[in-house]
Image (cartoon, rainbow, N blue to C red):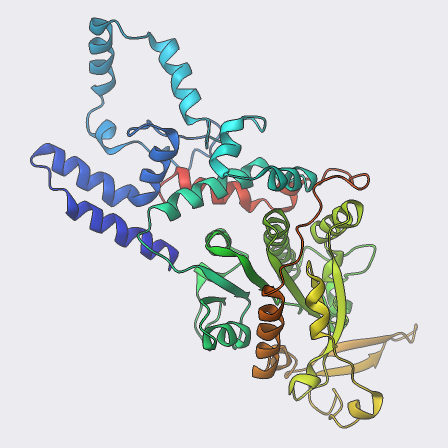
Amino acid sequence: MVWAASKNKAASKKTAAKPKGKAAAKKKANVKKYGKLLSARRRLSGKQKVPGLVDEDAPETIPPPLVAEEAADPNKDKKKKKKKKKRGQPDAAEEAADHKKQTSVISPGAPLSDPTLWDAAKFTTAEKHRWELLHLPLTLLRILVCINADLKTWQNFDTVYCVEFFAGVEAIASAFGQEGYHALSYEKHPAPGEVNDRQDLTSTKGFLTAMTWFCMCGVDALLWFATVCGTWVVASRSSTKRSSSSPLGDQTLPSVNLANVMTAHSAILIALAYVRDTSWFLEQPLTSMMPEHPLLRHIQLVCHSQGWVWNQITTWMGCFGHDRPKASFLISNRHWVSNLQRSLSSEDRKKFVSTEEAGIMTKSFQEGTGKPQFTGGENLKATQAYTKEFGMAVFQAWEKARSKPSPDIPVVDSGEAPEIMDWAAEVPALDRVLLLFFHAD
């Protein structure tokens, strides 16, 4: 969806101007190969023609993006140099220094202290302060600069008020849509048997889509995360080997590794929500240990040290018309999350069919130790779907709070910040996302 819009815009721009002869052929080749991303890169550099803003250490398997004119005429640089000498223009060293200054905004080698990068991101003082407190990587800032530059080239797009990640039946996004608010649902499997790799949060392109949608959100938007819990709940703990001392579990298992990446990418978006002071919610079953992921744990420690909001409440989906009682917890940076808190008495819980009878979970005991262990049943995944009642309850809580905006999170430090988190080590996809802007996809 995001890339289709960019390509369509590039095509429309191509038809707007009709140069003749060799110039037309060069422009056609350039637009076809690089599209709007190259144009965005040129605008950020401050020049119309940029000889490739590429990291010198970029993988050799991906060639640096040459401008079409340069690729067609290898002697063009020599011709330029001769002309410059005749006109008395700066020598090669001065020209290289000037080019470095112009391209430092988004080039991978730009220093963190470079004010032009922060200016390009258009961060307020408070946002920059929160970014630094979270120790977010500079690569992430460059990605945001590139995305925002590309969004400016779009003719029009509706402000997004809700993004429901791992939407499933789209109960929350649908509730916003029914009330006239533009909402987006992010789902890898939109229908049985279908796969949308542009909305796969474990992939580079899917992560880029998620960040683009984040940049399209209004200041009072809601980000809802129902990150897949399959490997985090107690039912799978015997096979995943997750524990409080080893929350990442057995990383040799593909399912565990993908779940760790998915949670890490969710944590990046949650951290950005704190920077921008955007509402976010994370919903998980009561037995999930996802908050123990190192990146989410790091965000939580920063919140506690700086006095930011990290609220966790318990609710029961059975109170919202679900066919299971399903105890869940909600974590948010908003106090109004308490409006979704519900309780279910033991007597009311007995009215529901047991988990074993419903084919959701089976209980057994380990040989020798006698410790209980749980195994998920064939109907376990079906319990993840939200009801329409729950989706509407989320919307009503958001709409009520929207009329009374909460105060901004503190700007002044209220305690010692935790140790620096190596986000790049936990989220290796950041470099690959950035490469999408500097290399032909």
